[in-house]
Length: 258
Ligand code: BTN
Image (spheres, helix red, strand yellow):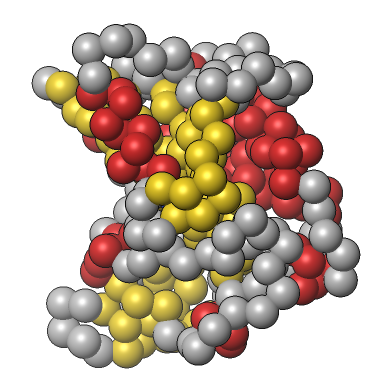
């Protein structure tokens, strides 16, 4: 544990810095399931993850020492399991708010919770909730942001970007982590205060391709169609209106952005 000077009430006050770990989500999950109670807001950050995990069993690859890879423990017991997407919204908005200061142009949230600059991904979120009964017991919020990495290998070269690639200048990782913890705490407190409608409106207003005609593929039949993102449901389903039909709601694995 390290005492730090983060300007927060609880998010990041207990900060554990590791030089290398398989995945900060795995590490925090193990800590949280131990009998000792772990403080809400605990953050595990790593210089290097050798088995970083992304959504849909993808790997998360980030050059050691150049990026932010960390996991945060929250206990949103006030949220029902069916409301869990509101946590994704709060965290996505928080990251978007912080990055906006550095990257004022082209920043969006690609549903469900990728952070995009124009058509490239700059960050991702992997939230793993432990649910007891119908409520969330605790949440492991894993965040990967590309900060000072200047090149990416293979396919990532075309799909991914970083702050330093865009600005041609490096950013202090700990200062950025402080800003992120501060924003997450603010948005989380809004969520805890029940500001669901405001959070959803803010999240939708930041969506990648909102109100733009674009191509999608439905997993159910593999067919491509043109349509417009209109918003999301309270459960986090994506609402797309096909050009020639009624609005359809898609779950995470049910639609691909083409
Ligand atoms: C995604 O976009 O697919 C989600 C990526 C989440 C990556 C972060 S890095 C820190 C934390 N530890 C992990 O193993 N994954 C998350």
